[in-house]
Image (cartoon, rainbow, N blue to C red; front, side):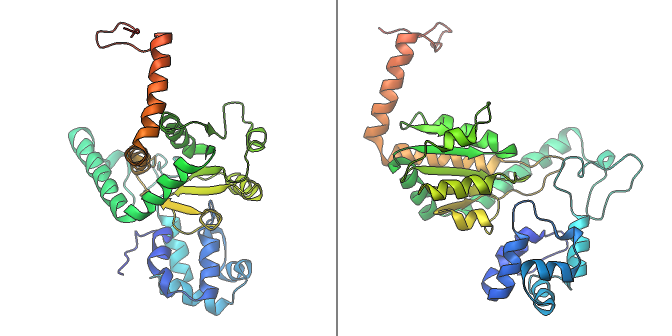
Length: 305
């Protein structure tokens, strides 16, 4: 597979995974860990950290399309950073190679056209990244588990909140594992064997996700991971994983693919288990009618007729 300089490390490694040796995969696992960056390391330090030889490290970077370690580190430094601050050039500072100066960014109609094009491409990439078999497996896990706990930290929290809001309409016992009071330990203590933890793991990542997933594993919970990387320690912990494309957009990442995947999985739950879902929705509608908390078609609160 041809790679240009703008292809980030996190996309190169999965593309070359099948051709990596066992030692090279050890290094790959290190580099794909949430929040890890090679930009602050020397080649010898990286080799020692991964417990592989320097020769293995040199071969690894060549196999994934670089001239060597130094080019990989330089290009990773040149690519847009992980934070919004790093993606915003300072006043008077020339943009890094491959980056657009903020003042030169398109505006108005052109900017809107480029934005919508990029969003459509992201959805197209989602179709290729996640297969129907993977979605079917996720649907089964979500509906058959006694209880479902949904976890998302930092940028992933809004995805977890959206997922929990949809899935709670389709089945009982869907809990957000990370509420406004920040009580993950208390909430995690309720997890029992056979329950399902759904973890959302998108950059910028929290260092607390892996400890929480490991704690859920010790409690014998099954785990479904929705992430923007196909290779990480979180992927290894999960029973099943769904990898969403998350290309670097200017300033902020776009999670349109993840939102779309959550929505589609929800519709597939309803399609596969129509009787159970209909009973659940009917019970909810009955409560809406009792409480008159939903506006009717003309703006008036709905009431039982």
